[in-house]
Length: 304
Image (cartoon, rainbow, N blue to C red; front, side):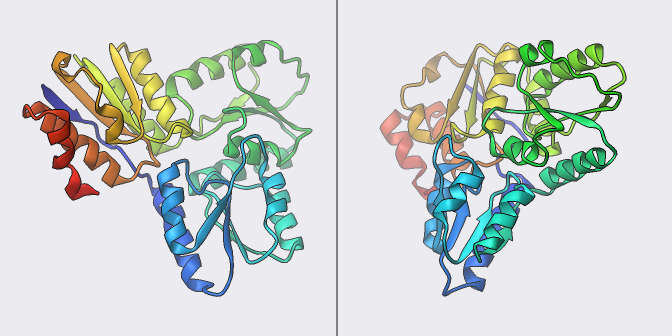
């Protein structure tokens, strides 16, 4: 079995920055309670690791950042890498909280771009993942003049009559999906200005999968809630790779039919820690070297 480790993979600069900010905040405010509003990044193991630095997380499925803020009544609140709206920031400051922004620079860039067009009285069509915090922060900028788009059906239902339309998207979308949606909007609104804002980290990871050839199986490592991880798996499926496995840790590999693989590729989402990736690679190498699953587990202990 040949193992291909896809590059780039794992942590992107936005995730690294967010984790660093959270750790530095804990050091800066040793006597304050520190809470992250929503998951800092979409990886539960990173969230758990933050507890070792006195950083807690408030998260509840279906609740907006504005709703979650009701649970934070003291100390420091850190806004996650996915971006935050000014409305939430203002509410936090009105509660007397110390605010720290760990937003990804690419997300901030998209927000600033949208604000520029809002100031010029454009109507915004924003393509994103429903209930994703990045999309939530964008739409909360101006609920009246930003229309959220999640799929082709939403585009077909559009009935916007506005002379100035600007179209953009969430930074972690599929490069294949976004092209279809942007083309559909351009056809319906030929006068629309379009800016594809998929970030370089997302784009490079997806393009790397599209370049793979003669692969029997693809392993994508990441949290189930991570949109960029799900998009990597989706890209692999769309590419026609026969078997695509989205996993969280090496423990999810135990039942995989490795004996049937000739060429196996491994990649990871942008919020996946390096040690998890290294564990998976070590496990696969051990299996390739004819170790049984239990012996293979022993081979990865150095990465724990």
